[in-house]
Length: 358
Image 1 (cartoon, one colour):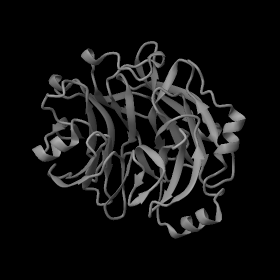
Image 2: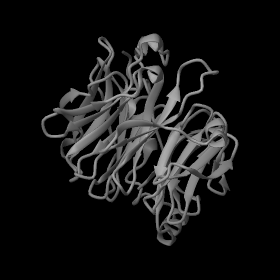
Image 3: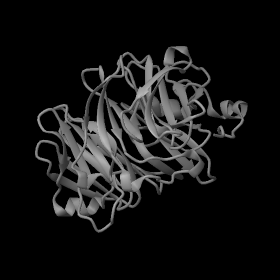
């Protein structure tokens, strides 16, 4: 598989240093005035890709180039790095130090792997777990990278499924929850989906230290073409999973699932208006600061649906063209769009599907 074609020296020169220490005076002023920062991947009007850091008013604090299109991120309070992952089937990730003025660290999967766009740090911030594809066999892999050693890849274990997408760390700090989307791909065939008739999505709970499968969960057989992708954990430690349906457009199927200790993995039936609005496609999910409100975006229909996690009932629908990313604010949510909107601001960027709080 070919590596990213951008020459390393040119990339590092344009990427800048730590995003907290390479700000313009205007950016520094925005930073000091902001209670929270967000990061999101973008494509600009010239076709260049990067990561933008934005403040709570959706003003851009700084931007940092990427070799190609980015997707999701990994960050936690103890991690010194903000890591941006390539969109599937890319094989690069870029780690930017949050406090020290150092060059970004660019690292890659092995030659026979590619990233799926997501990863998560261990509780102490030292290890990075990344969703990968062993594309020769189609086996899902969790690659393990050591942030204290330049993101050297030190180990791996199975994701216990095909097409691992988002990974979240459960509140116990010892268990990974992996959404295996069920779709097999190969970089020689781009983003083509190779096994739709035999898809087998699942949610795997994996012990971090040993890579042991603790449990695996699937929906009913009639939902085997609901690709489970993005997740958020509520205050009751339930995992909410957004799906993307790969079957007949006329099928009447749910787009959300929920994993809890009592019932396992179950489909979430929404009221007709909310279900119709999502259009069988959940692009991004986020839990609000109250721990009990879930926001689900759908780029296909340009909607954000907010649910009460206790009842599963929709409490609000907001329509914005091209809506993609969504993330919690102190009160409510901030969202982005493919048309440049971020919160109430407008930018000359096409935002990718995810927003992360840094």
